Length: 138
Length: 138
DNA sequence: TTCGTATTGTACTAATTGTATCATTGTAAT
DNA sequence: ATTACAATGATACAATTAGTACAATACGAA
Image 1 (cartoon, rainbow over the protein chains, first blue to last red):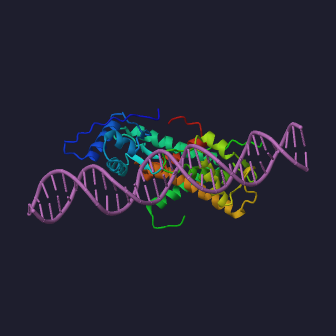
Image 2 (image 1 turned 135 degrees about the vertical axis):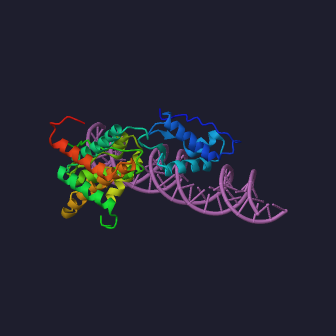
Image 3 (image 1 turned 45 degrees about the vertical axis):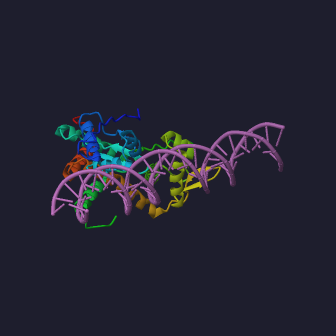
């Protein structure tokens, strides 16, 4: 279950850089549901070995995908598909997703013993701090 | 009584090292009275087993907490929450822990593309729903 | 008490993973 | 031919987690 094959077809004569092909195909597989949020991708070395390319080439592809927030690479841990809502997701799904995220946050905060008032105030403060990063106090 | 469950929620995709998550959550639970001075924490092996991580990862978290004088680890005995809770530092720690939890939530929501306004509104709605569980709509 | 053993944390090392930097190669423009 | 640049490869590094052996303590049995 932890292992997923991730079959990529590279064309070494296409003129397209290897790393671009990797990027494109991972994006495609994510868009088609072959890859799902949370999935762990092969390590740069494992995928490189399978594709018969240098692992830096895979790392480059991963870095691009990471910058696009499509995957999350973590040194010493591995790389994972991020939990981004598909672009075609409806606003309702979007709301539900935020709702679930929020509910988890609130439940956790309540479980830790914080009052609703404290939670509300802290969220307000932190959101304001996001908008105005001038104040650096913690 | 010697046994306390110590429920920790690890997110293996969060980018935060496991040991950091353990440290943060234990700090939070202490700040909020879920853990109290004198409480015995699970052994490194027991907690590691439950969290499905290596016991050295737990040991690392314990060592950090020990250096912060939050817990006292005693070889051959176990690990305990420090008896002397800095009275004024406790409230400070409490605020910080809610702050960190909130910041993580906000960052995640922003990363998912939600606006500050959406986040603020959803938190408000969910908190209200907590207080008045009469309304069932989602 | 004294000893044996289980339990507990510690220390050191190894393995796995991604990162950073520079070298090499190949191709196209000049 | 030379130069420039992009793509790829090689090497060394850093971060995280896992593996193994060990030391300190507790506790019961002899």
